[in-house]
Image 1 (cartoon, rainbow, N blue to C red):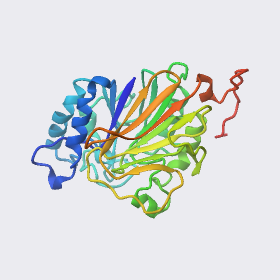
Image 2 (image 1 turned 120 degrees about the horizontal axis):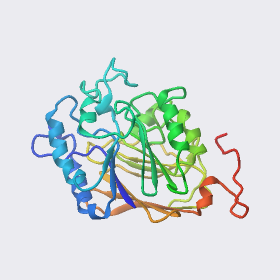
Image 3 (image 1 turned 45 degrees about the vertical axis):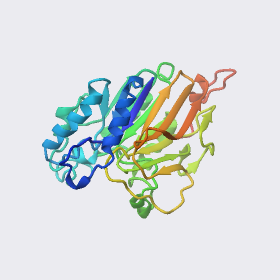
Image 4 (image 1 turned 90 degrees about the horizontal axis):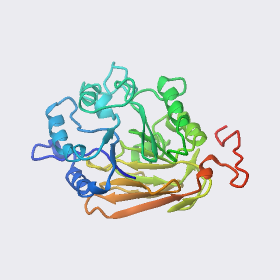
Length: 325
């Protein structure tokens, strides 16, 4: 069971404004070349960058059709799909150009009960995905926070042992320059509202876009690295690994010069990610560059099925409380 993450990608001709997405052509081509080995593709927001210019959707969909006609594609909401002042978006900026999510909803299917919310859960093979909308309120007490806990708590780890969390803006960890300048290394109020849920329900990997580069964290909880292994994580779950995979095509973003203890690997370049679940016990992550499709970063998670629940492997006793409580 294999799937790709694609972010900020548009394959364009000669009319791309200001050469905004210079890496998109290579990213798209590398993914199409490997589609025979792919089961499903996820795009985590900022799809067409149309910003109110509908012709950009035609252009994007013509490119993306090379993928959508062959494998299932799931998408999430980014700021360039949803945000606009006075429309209920969490961020009061005009990034959608007035589209307010309508164009994306009419172009792509969302399995949630209300497609305007853009948050949903879905199972595919051995994966359970919780896809959130970072452009609507996710904080405790919100409808989306309620959905997030329901999504995470509803997974049957005997059927879907790999639990994946997806959002556009970085609510986990990023060394991006503007996050570093703010001092939080994530969206303000991001981790504080969600990290207890990630820990309680043992989210394996969280994926983020928005920042146009690549970065991977160690398993980290409350800014503390709980495992200093770099490429192989085994045994009982200890914390979520966070991956920023935003270099699919749009102009690249600079990282902060500050050293962050939780950061394993950074790359200010165009690329994409691939996850392969071989069975209930083995998961492989690969980061590939768009220029050549070669692997530049990878890690394995291997464990026994009982490990994800923090159980005693001899007596199969599972504690009532987790690190989150």
